[in-house]
Image (tube, rainbow, N blue to C red; front, side, top):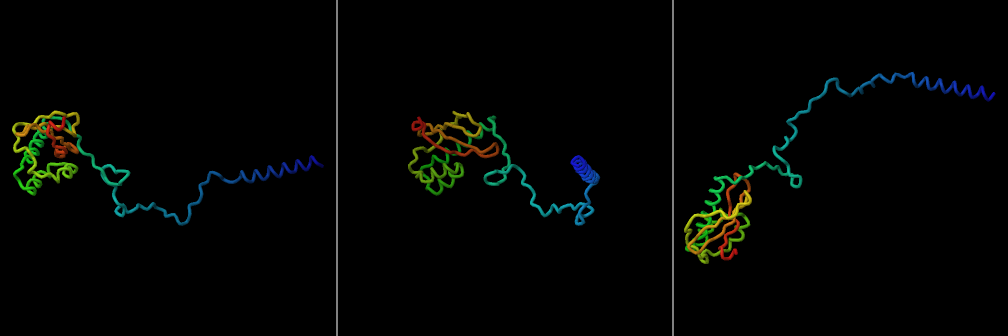
Length: 180
């Protein structure tokens, strides 16, 4: 009897498995009734357009690439001219402070403007530029050191620029004797 019971269980199991295998697995599921027949295109005008340029991950501000400066003849001439112009604006001890500062301040970096804001022009020993400036350090296309001769001796000016299109601005004006 035991053999018939095992055989019966095997027949029942085979029938159950055959019933499961009989379902059509290749048929696609029926689409839900809420799905529209044609796809809907979103209204793109409702979205903010992506920024052009790079986005700073820390601030979220858009960064536009700036031209990289190179040391060419134009750059060399412009840094010397900027140094001479700044030295001429600096070397005017006979001016009142307001006039002196109004003409010097735009030629300075923001940090230099803070540093030189309390200088009394009457204490400046220089009265005139006596020759052409000379580049004495140009290891970076962003920073240069220019020596300018004056009636009170030679001065070293350090100038910076942010990119190829930015103006050269003075960050330091120092008598050579004090710089050594």
